[in-house]
Image (cartoon, rainbow, N blue to C red; front, side, top):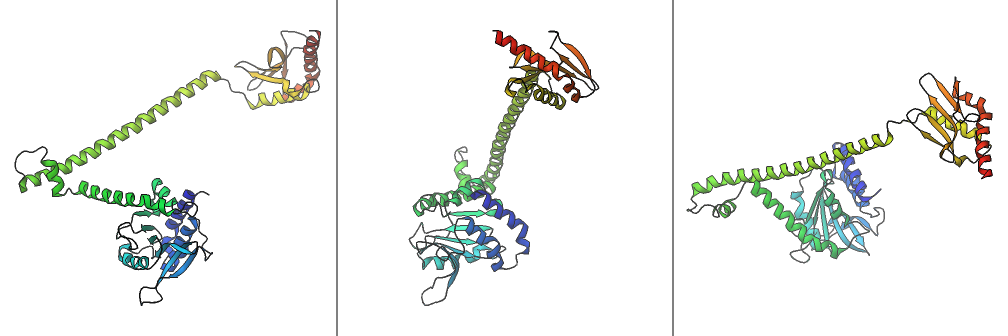
Length: 358
C-alpha cells in the first residue's frame, strides 16, 4: 500500500470511528499512532518514537509532550495531541513552550483529524505563531499529500522542508486574505480599485456604493471563471464522447457485424482434435464471415478443411474431400462432426500431397 492509500485509509477509519472515541488517549491510539506509523516510523521502537517525552521548562520539572520522533537519538518532531473534538487554537501556547526548550525543528499540534505543522521561520528556536502547513485528514487534497510526504521517514530532509515552509506559510496567509477580501472587501481594497475608475473625491457614501459594486464584480468574475472552466470540461467530455462513438463506429465497420459464437469455436476445436492426427495444431485456423464459418489449413482460404453454417435450429457441415465445391451435410449436433472424421482427414491429406508434389 502506498503512502496516499495509507492516509486515505486512516481518513476512512476516522469517519467510521470518531463518534465512539470519547477521550484524548483513545484519539491517540485510534487515529494519531496510525498516522505516525504511516509516516514510516516504528511506534514500538523507542529509538524512533518516544511517548511522554520530557520537556522540562525552567524550574518546572516533569513537563511532557505526547510524542517525540527521533533521528540519531535527537528529537526532530514534537507532537502534542488533543481529543478529536478539541479546538486546537486553545493549545498553541502549550506546544510553543515545549518547542522552546527542545532541539526539535518541527512541532505538530493535532486532534487526530486536523494536523498543524510549526517551525521557527521568524526567530530561531522560537516557534512561529502560525503554522506553515495544515491538513484535515477527512478533507485532504492531492497537493497536501505530497507536502505531507516530506515528513515521511524515507524522505525526511530538514533543509528541503524549510525551503518550502516559508512559501507555504505566506501562500496560506495570502489565500486567507484574498478569501476575506472576496467575502467582505476592506475599505483600502475598495479605495484602491475605485480610484482607478472614479476621478472625483471618494466620500464615505461613494466608498459604500463601490463596496457593493466590488462585491458584485468579484462574484461576477468568479462566476465567469467557473463557467469557462465548466465549458472547457464539457467540451473535453463531448470530444471524448465523439471519439468514443467514432471508435465504436469504426469497430462496427471493421467487425462488419460478425459475431463468432461459442458453438462455432466449439466446432473449431472438434475439427482441430480430428485433423491434429495429420498436421500441427498451429496450422489449423478459422475465418468467420456473415454467412459461414470456415476452418482452414495454413490460414489459406484456398485450403478449406470444412465450412459450418450454424443457425438457430440447423447445423450444416460442408466437406471438401471429393468435391472442390464442397458437399453439404445436415447435423443434429456438433458431436456429429466426428462422424465425418475420415472426410476431414482425407481433405488434409489431399492438401499435403499437393504440397509434396510441388
